[in-house]
Length: 52
Length: 290
Image (cartoon, rainbow over all chains, first blue to last red):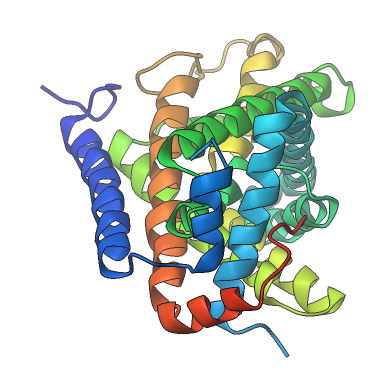
């Protein structure tokens, strides 16, 4: 089946989902490597800002 | 002297904090800024249509692209200078904000959605106004708008998708360099580069396309009357070839990848985490308005 004009193109959606997963993984690995990033204010956010 | 990349990512995080503070506490104001930003984008589309009618046939398609890019340049300048919202910029701003712990994934997603809705309304409304005019109802502009619609909406999903990625890769590099630059002239030059590149480069921008491709649809009846007896390609609002929704869908997801992965994440990872942490130690203000 030709998906080039379908809203459900599996290759493109696969690439998009893969890119979003990659984004999440990159951010998670960064946080794991730098747990105290970016520094003091982040700790303030954790205690004061209920949005996090 | 332009800020270094470590200063830059902190500035972007501060901008993120300002924007998402508005999203949390003043969502209607944010929606309005999105409406204004969406309209400002299609100021450029309107000018691009105006100056390029008849050009491909008489001066070559490349010259048409150049003219369109030149008149589109200042769309991003006025958005950045006014501080209004363009969702494609929010993509790189938000992901850097996530890295810096300023926002979480949920707020990032909600902010992008709200920005898109505001931009959609502004872009669509402005181009609807244009479609009600007499100027753009003359044959050269009817034909040019329709030709642009056919070219963009006739692309396959993969063609649209890759040009969506390329668009925000180019455009958001310009936008982040606007933040990096010091001085009005440098900032204007950086912001002007983005739309010039993405328009002259024939790429796909979701907000520009909302209005750019809605115009020939709003005017299609007039176009068909003007072309009576000649073979025409019919455009439509839905999915499938020559559909507005078909172009918009793959442009949006391409733009998301271009802005987040190739701009936001790249600049963040190039910055030095230790220097950023050192800069945070002396920091007292955590919000910047563009």
